[in-house]
Amino acid sequence: MSADADEGSPDAARAPGERQAKGKAPKRGSKATQSRAATEAALMAAALRLLERDGVLAGLSLQAVADEAGVNRGLIHHYFGSRQALLRAALEARKNAGEAPFEQVREDAPADKEAWSFEAHARDSSYARVVALLALDGDEEFAPMPYVERRLADLRRESDEGRLPQDVDLAAILVMWDSFFYGYFVMRTALARQLDVTPEQLDQRVVGTYNRLTGRDHR
Image 1 (spheres, one colour):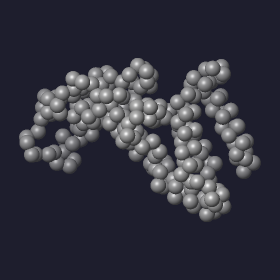
Image 2 (cartoon, helix red, strand yellow):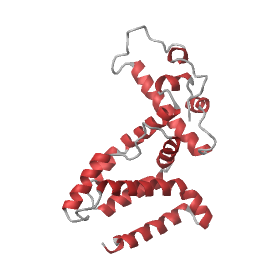
Image 3 (tube, one colour):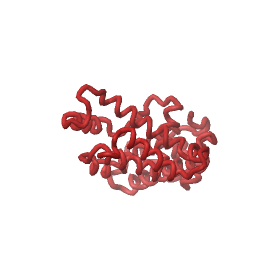
Image 4 (cartoon, helix red, strand yellow):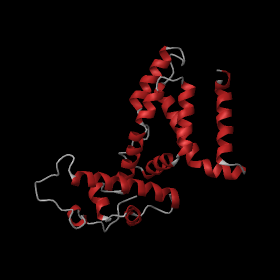
């Protein structure tokens, strides 16, 4: 996914009134800074809504994103530079929004953390779809696994507590877990449709089977 060819230069892309005097950056907390933050948030939310509504194969038009957010399209180029950067920023915003709940469950039992993560993705699977989109696009700046260092630290602690084998590859556990989540929630609706069940019914069957295979239903 490359940026639209006619986006123009950063200066030319700014809406009227957006230009600053040369060498004068807006002060922290100023109206200009607040306006930019609000515009960036609106653009990220608009991009995710359009992907949710129109699907990946329809493409992500920067003009449609700007129209959805109610801003000048040139601001996308000025603030983000490309579709990839816009979507990476949207994922980062989602990750930041989920940081407090993530911290609250870090000390929970592994099965409880897995259940929390599954339920969070079931409520909003757009994160998984954007992850898949950026991965397929070959974006070299994209890092798909959130909170990696903290999650590895939790796995090391759980291994020391005897909840995991001492010699298990902890990084591979993260890869396997996130691959399952992203793959399942990207295909969830289509899989449920093929099996003629609702996504919620499929969730119950998948979770139940996972718990049975891993012994979670006997904890």
